[in-house]
Length: 214
Image (cartoon, rainbow, N blue to C red; front, side, top):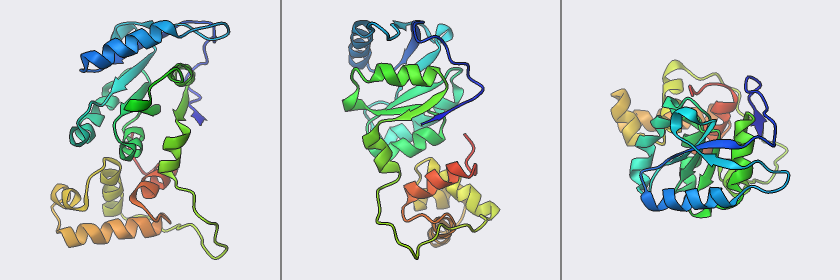
């Protein structure tokens, strides 16, 4: 969990003004009911407000897994920090790369969302423990293994940015106007230089190095 030092920490007693950004009327009704019930001694109340009056947004990517990746760009247009609700654990890294300050699975939204919203309002980035494990899977420590430290070429930086958006090798090739074989070659080069064994690990390491534009 990390904090943005430019965001002031508000009093924990202050109500959290939350905008619900979802096209699903059932989810909106369920979230509104849940947020209304939350809030107890020592914890801030949650007030559902319009987008222009919000301190934090609860943004829903929708049910369509394929459409989710195309919608993640909406996160970059928000004026307030957002907790993204996603359908698939594979969308966690792309959501963070797109600017989400918190990520939760759609079928696991519950009372814990209050703590996530409070943390995000204070400038923290939060991810559910189970989802965090999907970003960096636990692996045996090997004494002979060292983290890749190669510098990425400009083309490889373009490739890792597209990886963060969840694009396949074929879509990367189409976007950059190169062959599928060349796209695969660049993806493998990115993973080797970043010391990653999976595409998700490569995205996380690229984020750590500041190579991905949020």
